[in-house]
Image (cartoon, rainbow, N blue to C red; front, side):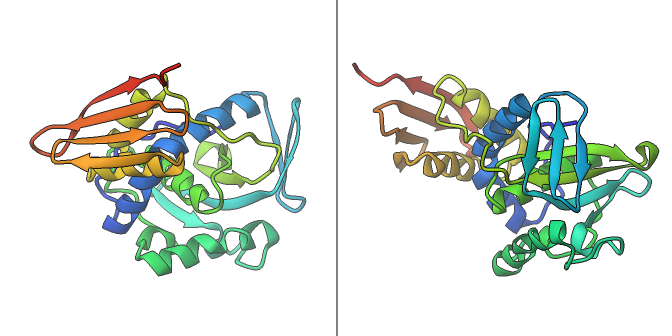
Length: 241
């Protein structure tokens, strides 16, 4: 199955993960939605040795093993720490930039071999958040997951195939994407909006209660915030013809 692009909130994640995840969240959710649409819901076959994902719609290459979640103890296990694979396995070696990125930016979730997700209301949703955010480090094409061990766990794969399309700025989806993203990463709502604007090359300016961005086509996105700094409104003004 494809990974859900609207994972639950992340109160237990580290400040470093919150900062990076929040910056990436809105664009990553949109990209994951597109990935899910392209890949579809058909049954798929994984070959980690060949690094392929095969289904009725064709073959996707560049598959990497991010990690797995045990539903028995709610712990995540990175592929490089899995004794069945290890860091030299080709489908795992491609994910090592995640660990390097974690070391550079103080993101403990990316450096701990087996992060404990028991502190989350829904550990399975936290695992999806972790997987999609980690996939963003690798280029953000999309993440696919499926049940393993007779449902006692899930495995999460990153798919780097360049056939996969990139999501483009969608003014109609923008309010939903930003509101969803701040629900996933609630610590710094402005960071979420800045990341979205930066991803799509907006010019933007901030004031005490607003953040205004202008897309290359002239579309204006205006976000406003309450006294606690929470995003309370997103409006989109189409480009003038």
